Length: 178
Image (cartoon, rainbow, N blue to C red; front, side):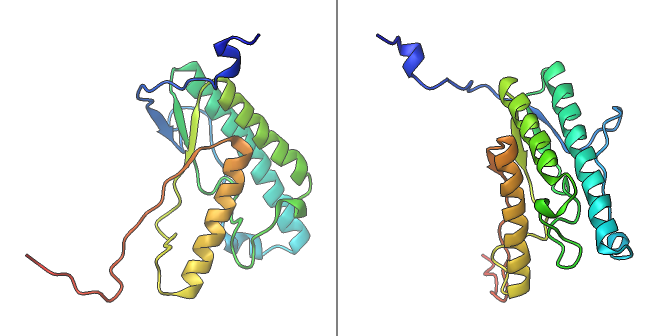
């Protein structure tokens, strides 16, 4: 016969968990970025090789960030929206299976998620202000959805449970002042 602790889901603490957001100033943990302009100067094979290098380095930086949080009693970490640089750019963007070693990069992100889970670290994302789901511009909406799908993909790899979104926008509506 199973005890209650064997059949019940694990209980999460309802205590406040303060966390860190994306970057470190005093620690040697750096997330690497690039621009679409820089990538588009390269032939596609060189782009993909460079992007694989950046993504791999960012997976390592994420693990270092999570280890720092776990070692300092910090219960949450917000992952940088550009952890996979220019992922959704219409010209420089890519799928992970296009990158040299893409499967290994995904595996490393999954290891980050396992570390976070075993250390009770909450992971989240917060897309930039350019993600506007209520935009009347179809191109803005399409790029917003692509960005959210990309972040949801990484959230699945690492076990993040939250993607915070900006909301609002009046778009031609007049405001009533009372």
